[in-house]
Length: 507
Image (cartoon, rainbow, N blue to C red; front, top):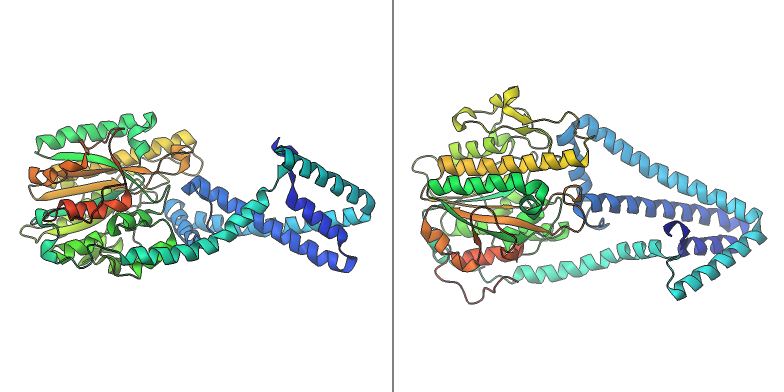
């Protein structure tokens, strides 16, 4: 039935071209052709965004993602592949514009050369369209007009959202809370906040992943229990899907729903109290460990780190593993070496782990921690656990296998780190930033990600006993689900002197 649809936009354009005098017809035909090509480009962008982020392309806010996409392809397959992809994309856009314009011009010449017949055909099809629309038959199509209207409406929605978000930023019950009233139940603890890239609900529930990932989490629960650690786990609903990790980081740390680039930029221009800043105000040394930050990162100043380690500053001397500039185990080992030295002051560290970032290609092997060194050991073939030869040409099954193994590696790195270096003053909060792309999850997947609080001190977990989270590192299907933007206030309330009356329960 899709091939039998009559697009109303084509009927309007044909009628317009037939009604115009000869001199005006050609420039209008060119304009129609260019417009048709631009609509095709928008549809391609929408398809790409749907496949990657499970949403359409935002013509106002998403252009920055093209630069991020180029960097991602460069990191994943090299600069040659990235240049080829960019050239191919530009060529596709130019080809669409040229071909649609030439096609409209040719059809215009054909219809005006057989004007009487063309008028009858357009009139007949118009009658069919009206009848089909009246009867609800899917032959009548206005999808292109709807698409254009939706994208045009994005500009107005963006302006409204800017005003609404400014009001949300200004409302912060913790803005003026003194440091001596913040996080009092965590005094003396090292609090580590780790984001595990693409660690989504499907990783612990999809049968294709849950066997391997679940075994890592369940085995980790038992191993850490022997070392005196206990854990509680639940789910958070992420503001993003398939990518845009920084939006999830913003949301969790700020207590605001950050689901687009405009909100991200507005947040960075504000003085919002993030979790990092709350720890800093309360006397902790705050640290950012960003293994994927390969270029200047202005966000560091906003979050308020006392110290910041980017990719260059982590001094890795080994090979890159697909997108990840360095293995997660190296990131954690270097953090331990630099920041958790004997006698150090309590620290709060934010550590995004990126070995499980798409495209889920080469995956390192877990090593003895004392052998990690400067990363040179990863040049040895025995230090690589998984390395598909052709990242681009893999089947969906192979991509899903790579995803599973990458998440297993990242989780194993965290579990082994706590097992090796954790002590009575270690508190680890780790969570996913978002679900992987629809290529992995399939359509209509949730935006939920697992989150876990882990500690040896029973007083820490006693503070979150009212959350209803489940025991262990792996949340079950009935574990509570909170919007990610509720976490900041719930965390500050749980570990403050007492839960403030203004903090609402999770939605």
